[in-house]
Image (cartoon, rainbow, N blue to C red; front, side, top):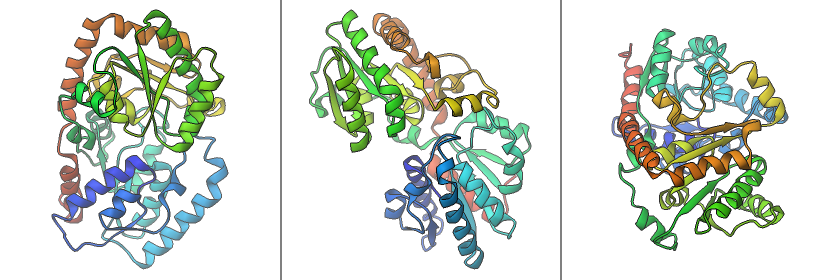
Length: 375
């Protein structure tokens, strides 16, 4: 059961690896084009589950409840050997709980951030999940301390992305000049994210260009809707610098860049794995942020910082997201190449720590749960 593109990628890799153990298995649930290409029959469109934030979900509660009830009814009458919820915890944990109560084995793949906030969800996880599969080692340590069965399987992106990225090849593929400095702007994959972050990103780019006139800018766009929103923000910025917009190809854009300015999320991890100095910005609605303030238990948010246990990269949250802050952090990287080189070495160590052949590691966990062999 996957709820968005990142879950679809993880689910597809897991299905592919599982077929090496059980070639004729039947896979059904909710998935996107990658899972469907691996033979998963999707019972509902995956995009109906793609909701973020505490307040943003309110308008979709009735539809999400209807979908979950339909799945509970379907799987009660057609019980699978195992149900695997891929991320989307607010949807999947409730589904897993109801089906586990009916005797179906359940696995959750990708931990919700209970180590960071809303720790009360641990009670539900204990009741809902036979086994948790996590992408990061600090998550496994947390679940072990809570006596919840867990396996660190590694992150598929760490397997997919090479240890050494080729900047020259990426620039050639994107038809960019082979020399000079480039800043990649990644203001998010959702229109709401771009609406919040694009003005500050573009103004920060303008401020950077004033200090470094030769600096050029590229911005990969996750969708046509995102591109439209970003173009509108460009038009509204007085003296906005030229920005080369690219449809998709985010990894190539980050590889081609010298520094990445990025919304929080998986793209931050990709920048780290590509060994690119990165600055993180993250904003949600004021109400979501206010509610989260009561529940958050950590003082670092970006994955590189959490993996290292220290502040490796600058991260700016909510009101800290300003053009002045962002441009200052970007310029620090550009003007301190020694700092960027040291960061790349640390990123390489973190990359190696996440390389665990995640698809096959996760498949082995699933087979062990089915055979009753996990801790």
